[in-house]
Image (tube, rainbow, N blue to C red; front, side, top):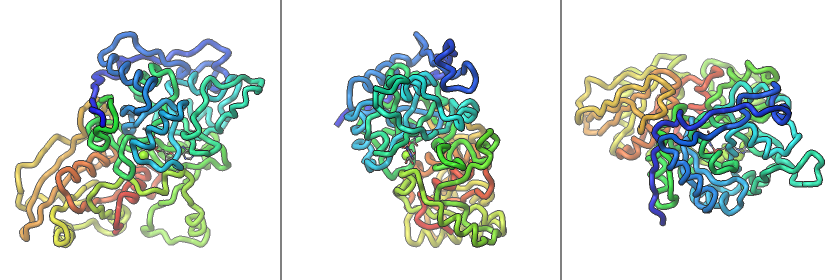
Length: 453
Ligand code: TXA
Ligand code: MG
């Protein structure tokens, strides 16, 4: 058992800057002769830098992973080149060893160090990386051969085999958070990092969530405030034709399709929208059958609070009429007959429960208006408590209407309702039949749900 410490980093934007490297080494990765993403310079002094140095020392000298924020969710980081350090991640999380880890780099120069001098980033990825890095996008790359007789030059870093779980590819990500990049720069090694939840739990979006799951199992959690995006990175495979999305995330299908070479990108995960008024043709049904999850992690139970989750598909509200307050109260009532406390998570259309008897004054932290709220200690949303006439206690949480606030608050809402004793949670899903980030939100919710209505 360790004493787990939260170390705050108050002003991540002051931590450093990107600098192009002089040619020629930069020409090997980027389509442009120089890329602004070439090299991340860590600041020499900044508030919280000491905390980052402490965390980086842990990464370099121990086999105990550290909790760290990114723009998507909190990660659990270890030196991706050291087997014992990487094994530490799997044991702390209780993660199955056949589920590979994403490798985080601080700049393109570090990615070059992983690929080996003279190895090009596959052409398909160049415009994608120029457009979406640094940011919530993970790309699959071939694991470089460790054969040092290769004339092109041996890589500076070799990934521990545990990182890729024996696959011939690895996932690479250059995060948007300057805090994450500075940590990696100081640790001076690529960082293997899954989400920092205990296996099967919702991903953490605050430092406190990490402690709630991993207290005593790790020594340090860096606190960079609540994550802005709130769902994980989009994982894409551009090594096949057409390229595919293995996990929907912070970059949407529609955004990917605007990039040259990615116009035909397809979904290769297993939860397309469940119907609506579309009648499925034979070809479409066959296509669905063929949508086997290709990211190993997508087959596991995931994102689950302790409470039973009942998900209402979002397209139903669009196709028919939304639930009336009377219908909602009836559903809460029947859920409450089997369980003590019922959580309700509202998004686009469900009516507020106002008018019912309030159990206590609502905890109103103010609505989230932006996905850029990184820097707050906690995720904020409106939460009200009610008692139904027949005695059921209700915790009603409003994630707001817009997609970015729903994604931002999603995991925190599940954890919050758990902590407040909800036995069952009714969630209003959103319509994910378009090509936007709703796909990522509904993918997580379908995995969290025990029942879909
Ligand atoms: O936003 C994120 O991606 C966060 C932050 C911390 O960066 N990380 C994250 O890692 O979500 P994790 O381990 O929770 O999810 C990684 C997903 C899993 O579904 C895994 O199976 C898949 O990416 N993955 C990783 N490497 C892969 C590979 N070589 N081939 C196929 N899928 C891979
Ligand atoms: Mg995860």
